[in-house]
Amino acid sequence: MENNKILKIVIEQKILIVIAVIAVFLSFRSPYFLTYYNIVNIFSFISIEGVIVIGMTFLMILGEIDLSVGAVMAFSTILAVLFQPYGLLAGVVAGIAGGALIGFVNGTLVTKLRLSSIPVTLGMMVMVNGIVGFGCHIFYGCKSLMKRDRCLFPASFCVFIIFILFHLFIYVIAAGIF
Image 1 (cartoon, helix red, strand yellow):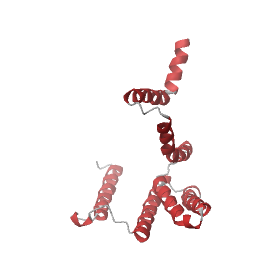
Image 2: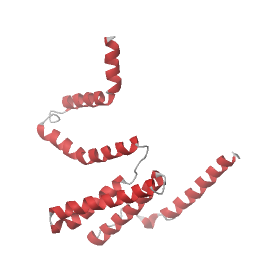
Image 3: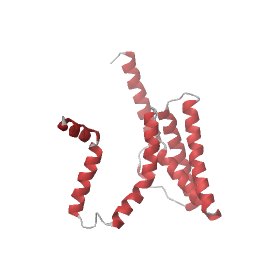
Image 4: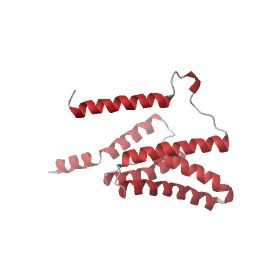
């Protein structure tokens, strides 16, 4: 009876057990791992991802998924930085408002128009990444990380060809030809 309780706890808490085992291993590997400054540093680095994980968990419980969270986070960050010269509060409000606006558009398209969340948020991710890249180029003179002059074909052309091949493949399977 007691063994079943322990086994049940181990099964339910396996992620925490793995984290604890990794922490014990790392504490033996480095004398700096369990120091106050390192623990504060770890928690400060995971705080942003923690907020995103909470939101994504809520969406997954509802049976949806949002692929645009990284792009929205970048967009909100750029808005916050752009509005920060007007005060800290203006920057915070601008960042939150920008993210909330994109979330509202995604939510409206998924709930009111009953579109699937994957293509809606994928499209929003591409659009917001374009806005972020354009804004970075305009405001800060950022250069592209891709060497486009070395490609035989543009990436968009390759994606278009792959899309057509994928469509034909799905059509062949759905028609029962394959």
